[in-house]
Length: 579
Ligand SMILES: Nc1ncnc2c1ncn2[C@@H]1O[C@H](COP(=O)(O)OP(=O)(O)O)[C@@H](O)[C@H]1O
Ligand SMILES: [Mg+2]
Image (cartoon, rainbow, N blue to C red; front, side, top):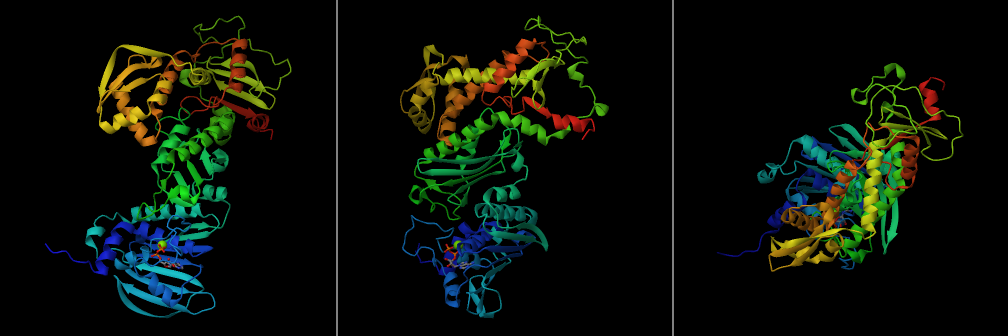
């Protein structure tokens, strides 16, 4: 065996393997360079998903010919003037991107500093291929042609131009959200696909993700322990089947962090079904010495000194905002779903709802089975409407929906969904008040797990104890379970602990137990709730409305659907063509 020093060519190719995985990663590096150069406008052109051509033009600082030559050398950067690797405010700092990209493509670099002439350097797979004067406005233009053409090993892993284009678009969107003050254009195969004028962050995010956020989004702005969180999240009722619109920015840098996934899940816990996902763009600002950005060659990951604090900030901030908005969600949702309101001409009775209007009967007992006999008596609307947000009950439709009159319109409540929510919130309040019932096991159960899992559980033992799960370390790879939350009933302790350990690892906090408890609570709540199809008295209906008004998160049911909708006076008039 002989050890040899690798030639620079090979070193660059190796670095390229880490930095430029696919066209999107090369594009990301180029756009980052433009932003670091102070560009106010970045124009991007792609051919065949970036496989044939990636061109990025900016109006930034530009480079002198000497700087251009240096820029193509490995580990040459202008961004670490005083070796302060721990105080990085630019996107780049490693000085690797340009030489790496140049080693696996044909690269044409043109640049011009304001007040000087432009220059052009060409480079073919790491070899200089000529240079000379160039005509261009101040700034820089880089063209990358035939990326990976001569690297079959890498080419094999590239996907179709369509898929590569998708990844490029995503990279541009992330950077465009990170820097809303910069204008961007993107052209693919000669077609303009994105035109973004400089904007305020909320407008930019809505422009890129969906304008629906303007109606269904909640703005976030909170500060805690020197950390700041801003951004926008969707109302629980505005959700998606994929978790593909969740973005995290740390000090303006787009990062991919599992922390966000877990924190979002925790914040929306029981507001949204498990297989649905909110839309979120969150911007965290942390002091520079609280975060290490030099942990990943493509700089898409960061390491927080105190990840729990960041996680806590996100969960706490979002939860607070969601609670504040919880009354709003259902009413807002209906504004966005006019299809819910049909005119009488096109009304088709729903087969499940029976055919009649169950009358309001003051003397009606609770829990009485319903017979769908249409009855003519309804609460006459003679008394003045007191100003309750959800109004006063006027009647019940199909023994399923409460119809109430509010000052500003007609309110319809899904009685089962609403009551289920109220019961769950009551149970939760009891738990958070410390009244968690636990059930001691007659014979403590020993659960065998991997050692790191045991370590994690042991570390969370106190918190778990507070939720009714009493555990004790019982050797390197086993845990003794002494008591379980009574609400869980007969549990598969081994399964529960394994799930908990995995979740603690993933989320940095023992959420699973709370999730499980909530799940159980929700199930119990469901069984203990006013069913659809039960006739309610006016007093019962009004009691339900009043409790909804003071209960947090009562605007949506445990599955994220609205519990009530309001038809404003204006909308009623519209239905009758009066407006
Ligand atoms: N679009 C650009 N405008 C001005 N200077 C640039 C541009 N792109 C690259 N440079 C210069 O080239 C250097 C090397 O770029 P790069 O290889 O991406 O490394 P890094 O961004 O980590 O410094 C940068 O530090 C910068 O000085
Ligand atoms: Mg760079």
